[in-house]
Image 1 (cartoon, rainbow, N blue to C red):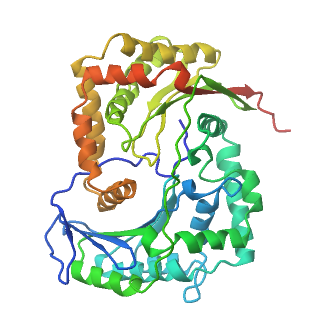
Image 2: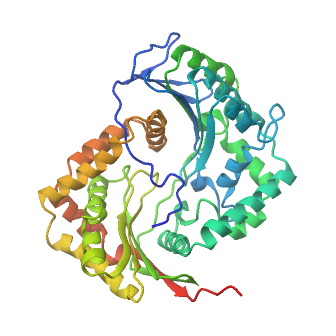
Image 3: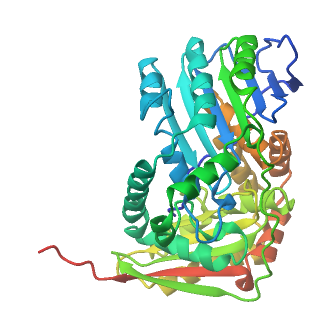
Length: 450
């Protein structure tokens, strides 16, 4: 399934040794020890020493994802991410990336529903460049009217190519919008086209000035670095940037869904597609989230999983069939089932087959071996990232943005404790008709080029 979250595949967990300590005047250099500090202006700082890392990583995260936008102003977060590379009075357009590149590094950024982050990989002795450049554009970004309108056009074209011309993405957007009535997950990160057309320079600058402030940001630096020097450099460059007004996540809840919702998308496409999304909790709201993670893996964790064997191997009615779910979001989200029909096969038959696999689990819990395999798959995916210093930093930051980096320990323990009965219980509780929103792609004949 093609979804809209920039980090859709990332939320894998890396377990590192050691515990966190507040950084004092002299920061210890112990390997694997996570050091943390909050500057007087509210900026959170994390530093992770890893002498075996070939590069150093700098990441700065802002609590400025699409959930912080408003109706009629969607797409601001992502457009601002683009504009952050347009320069400051000291460093002109694209100079940021050129400086990093000349130093042998790489840089990039990403926007999600919950946050935005900017990152660089550099040699450890060059990490001061990231600190200087990011501090400069936190306070001095040039938001020129002409550049804003030009970049807005770039984002609109991106939306046309990656979303409007992608039938399955359109189904996903329609399902999200229909499933959520209140929380801001109901609009796409890239924004609605109608809103993008109306964004002004002042809209963007106001959003920048409100959200890109130290007390709404977090920095993590990791690698074979001199911890003392890094901390002092961050204090020096960021310490005198004034704090802004407190930014809170919207304090809203989703009203109860009282029946199945259905949407249909007619679009030029080759094959019909169905996406069924069920209201589900996140890690912050229910312990059921761990069993839901395992349920998704039982249903579609590889070619030996239930949905692949049934719909693709045995019945041969689907080209693809998947289940997916992530509990690591700021608001309760959705548990997805989706499938693409094979040529000549009915999408109604495919949808029915998806539900049949769920009903089997409701009637009879998966055996211990099947659940253990699913848990092992989840954990194996996590462990694969352990050699990446970038990944280590990303995981610490993502959990901190959710509510505290120590949530990762709770997550792992929760997954390991899931039983077959737990999997059956959450299937019965959440994967029910009245909690789902179904989107169906109804292919139109593809126009032939003349």
